[in-house]
Image (cartoon, rainbow, N blue to C red; front, side, top):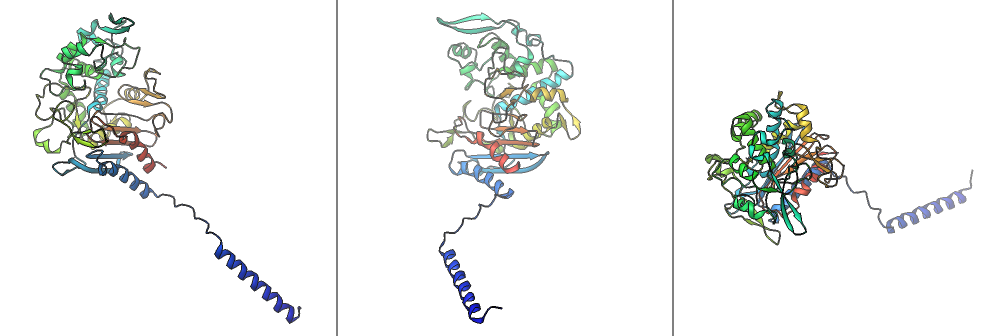
Length: 427
């Protein structure tokens, strides 16, 4: 046992040391705590803020976003204005011009006819449109341009993959000829048919007489190919494209707000088109083909399989969900799995030369992770000239649809949308 004097001394030393440590600790800089990991609700709020910022900064007037996972709505958001000047708010049932998103529906219609034995993928389009039996190509030369016969006939599968060589006729060396036929520059941005008083097949027969920009099967050329397919649907089925879509796809899928021309009683649900200004803001577009268009008061005659439809975000998501499920909607098969496989896998190798992005029979395909932001291999999608865009990710069972009306579109909203959905809904 230690003497009491030694015990007192030891206690004093321990007390002094503890006091010194306490003082030192109070003077030392605080150790920063680890940042909080964003919760699922935080990440979805981030998606909200992302979309809202484009309206607040007047880059777009308004937009609608819808996300499905396993076929269920996990996110829907209407932001801003359907008509900014009238202060009419955007709603989730607002109707949009979807332009080239029409192409996937036309492609599905063609594959339905393939499955019925009415169309073959490898047969020439001239079987349905004889004017295509002999087509020409405008080849650039050192001396200018020469018009030569196409090396072979255009096949149905060339049209499905945009490898027919048919453009929108806007290239300087052919634009004049297209303008004379009421196509290319004469059709606004080339793809616009809503104001035409002639049926689509009449326009396509005129197109066959014009020179194209590449030989069939040799290059990826985005243009009128799917409009040609719309005429094929009419000739092969004996129905107008409008009737075929309505009876074979739109009504079975419950797409009640998808039309070529808007019923007058839905006029007040159609989103106004805006245009980007040099400073990145948006202003109301005019009434011409690159603006509001003739989708309500037009002649209602020409059904453009390449860019003619109007739809809602929810309607289009229903179509995409059917494709994601391998052609089945609510237990009823509309397309076979083999047909869907052709739509959603690359059918053109590296002809697009776009770093891992291919093209199937109606959709852009992702063939390399990272080729399209965060899209995994197997994802597919496309967009429309007025600003709409969609992506389907079978791996995560996601369908993503974003719709707004801005032409020309100078924002990066479309490029970032899928990324913001992935960070919110994929672990």
